[in-house]
Length: 271
Image 1 (cartoon, rainbow, N blue to C red):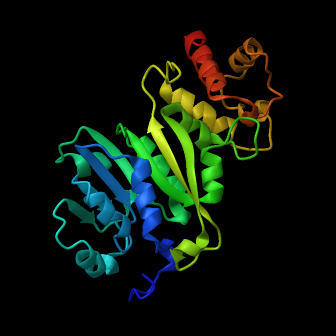
Image 2 (cartoon, one colour):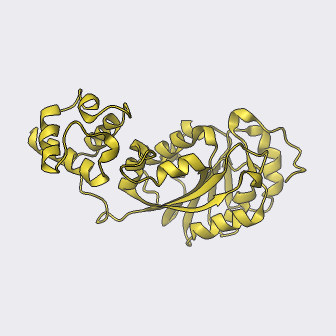
Image 3 (cartoon, rainbow, N blue to C red):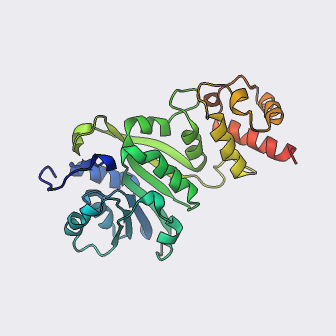
């Protein structure tokens, strides 16, 4: 990997894994089943892609840097189950891209570029595709946010969004020395396993629920009264009283279940 003849582009956040053991551990964590469609965002030189392809499942990759085409063709020679779309993942229609595939479940396994980690995760959620598992390597700070608990500084809207759909687990830390070029910070591999419908909090109106969460965290240091100004403030105040809270609380003091209760309270009582 150190001898890779390639001009790394800082604008794409390119940091390629150079240790095979890390790639093997990522695939081990993913625990990939048969008949799984694997999606990788940012394959880079194809190190992880090759290991995913060895499972025998179809692998669909998105790579924004078309100058990597020759390197990927060379490194993935002989793997007919890999398709690489040289395009910006954030601009793609994911439903359309996977329409021709036959599969029983979808896994996303990737070393995500630091600079667009959150937009990529949000696109995966907002695509309305039932993704069964996500195993991603992200900047350690982002991993802390994904795994954060209520009443901690890292807890935010992204944490709540993802916890609605997934059980989230921090798997292992990856040193910055394991990449070429070396980034400034360590990384962490995080797994997100989709919850069953029974495990998800019952929500009457998902659009309102997610908008409520977004508004609650809009100004992180302000209380709910300030952040809920444009919403059904009186109903929300009543709902908060029912769970022994009030409008002086901040968003990070509310659990996923609290948000679900508030959303349902307003949805039912504003009719």
